[in-house]
Image (cartoon, rainbow, N blue to C red; front, top):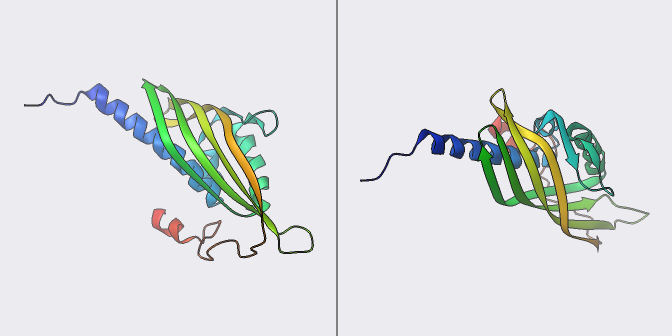
Length: 173
């Protein structure tokens, strides 16, 4: 006979799943260019530290900054792996590995673009306020990044759309 799962264990599992969904939702928000969903990842007073050379400020200011950067790309794709979370009541910490692939718009007079591949980690501090988990502070750490010239002007599958017209958006509305 097995012991029943305690309410504390179930609550911790639910918190970990909720935080994981927020992390995954952040990547989706960026790739589908859904700014309200990207803002929702942070508490209004949450902060983001992507390093002195990238960005330091509030989470919402980071979303505004990255929106401009992503608008200058023809495509981008974010993936998350190795999500580790520790929960202590209404507070939590996490580390998630992220891979980002970006393709610039054509530059100069030719069709050439560049592909940027970056791997790093989101090291986040979380809190649950009014039943909602969101980031209090994110520390992004770059582990590896490379930029590769690309002479292929065809950037992506035409069905992949950065916006509400993407086929996946209708499924989740």
